[in-house]
Image 1 (cartoon, one colour):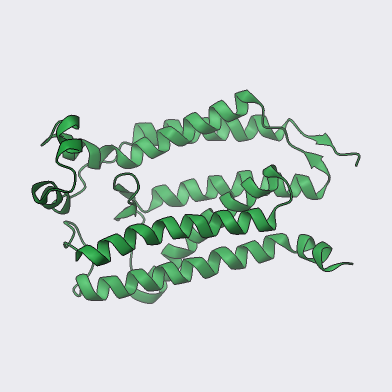
Image 2 (tube, helix red, strand yellow):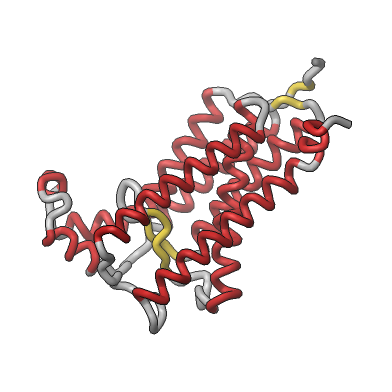
Length: 242
């Protein structure tokens, strides 16, 4: 067995270790930040961050995505495999991020605790259980692809499948940014948000944001779309004779 074949045989193990390791690094950084900015425990509204720290956080998120993308390109042989590795690592990272935070600092207190999920292009928020559910959905589609590949069965992403998955993903993203965006639009019009982007008044408003309501309708609808796409995908496999 060659070194490459050995890597392929234990691919799930290696990409799982990568995702778990990233999760620990992420949780360690968050713990440091919370010790600095939230010594009595994290809660909304957010404490304003120094400009350099805030910018660093933004670029850290971009760097994280580039790390996942780079690893998936290296680990996968085809677009299908690379997509599966990226999705799987992202999901494992997200789940273990919360596991490590709970083990190390006892947070979150429950799966319904609100958290900041992402900062690009606007703030994403939601109860902890929502990204966890999405992560398990992502693991499902990734394992489906990788396991079928091990059996030389090629799954075909046709336009119908992509429509369900992309539409579902957009609905999920919309559910995560819905509350924050609604809050900002309660105070400024869309044109004003672009006009005053980066202004002190807008930043103060953003820092005073406290989650109000999660759009469960959009979230469930998005999950249904993605799951339907996964189910259709599972029936598209053809044996690879090569």
